[in-house]
Amino acid sequence: MGVWGYAVLLLLVFFVLMACGVPISFSLAISAIITVIASGQFQVIAVVQRMIGNSSSYTLLAIPFFILAAKLMNTGGITRRIFRAASAWVGWIPGGLAHANVVASIVFSGMSGSAVADAGGLGQVEIDAMKEEGFDPEFSAAVTAASATIGPIIPPSIPMVVYGMMTDVSIGALFVGGIIPGLCLAIACSILVYIISVKRNYPRHKFSWKEVGLATANAVLSLLAPVIIIGGIWSGIFSPTEAAVIASCYAFLLSVVIYREMGIKVVIREIIATVRDSAGILLICCGAAAFSWLVTMLGMTQALSGLLASLTTNKYVILLIINIAFLIIGMFMEALSAMTITIPFLIPLMSSFGIDPIHLGVVLVLNLMIGLCTPPVGTSLFICAKVAGVSIERMYKCILPFLIPLLIVLMLITYIPGLVTWLPNAIFG
Picture 1 (cartoon, rainbow, N blue to C red):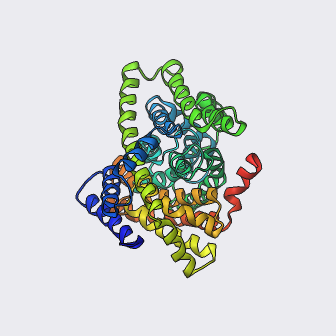
Picture 2: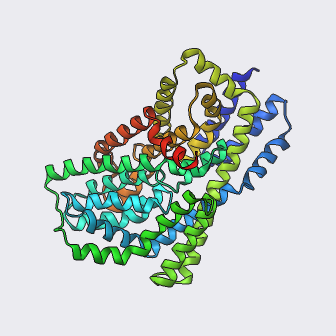
Picture 3: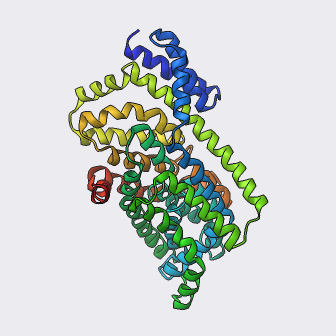
């Protein structure tokens, strides 16, 4: 059995297990073990060693701490203060609270690193406020789902942590590389919100310097969180992993000690929920380590690279193929699962076609975040539909206009790499 035969066996076993309802982490590991046995080239213990070795990665410590930070912020009143401040800043623009929705996502993204945390936590506050002011529930939900894609693009970012770990790329550089694309997403979404709001005559607030001052003062400590996190990474005071710990500690300090909106029992509950969520992600990473190791050792990545090189030598055509593939994958798979399966195949393409790994990382993450907003398996869609109390069918229709600005920004950062790479090069060299 040649390389392609083993590739077919590996993927066939994986998808059969997935179809039978086996969790993706176990599907990855079991498919690798079965293929190892069939090949007879390696010992099964090698697969186990890869899984154990991957679980001890220092970089992966960032994931549970960023998840915990997001949970503490959502429960401890931080998100409400951020949204009130955003409403005071931009609420006077037609469609005021919809713009505040986007701005709040920018600020919250600088603390949580998760689109789902944005949609589920901050989204609850945003959607309820928009519905009370007369916005259509489905529009409110669609704006929230679209703006939540900014979360993992602007640093910090849980998907970028996983990508950096798997590709051995600087996570700090990936974080910085997402800043300009994230701001482009916010601008693009706000332009569409403005057009729709003017057309539908959605409400806006009267501008008040007093409200701006009060709301900003009330949220100033919350607004300092992204400054501390991003500034610390930029300046080299702490690493991205250490930034996750600092984010959790700062969220605890605000929620429990200063704002006093959480008790110790609630903190313990959120820690338990964090352990549960993190365990699922880390199991996927361990299974993916075995899967990616086998893919590399059997020569599948080199074979795929050679196949694509025989079709074209133009890296921009390759980037188009990657975009199309990941947009489709994102429609059916959760982001981290899709990354852990596909990244091993992409690593040799970077060197073969001269694709910057930081550029590709941000492009992949945005692709998969768009997948969170697309049917049939868009996680953000389901969360926002539930919060807004609208059917998923209505959500499918309302989200379609917001896919346009997201796809425009995706094409811009794909074919203008400087939008991603300029800032990391300027800061890190």
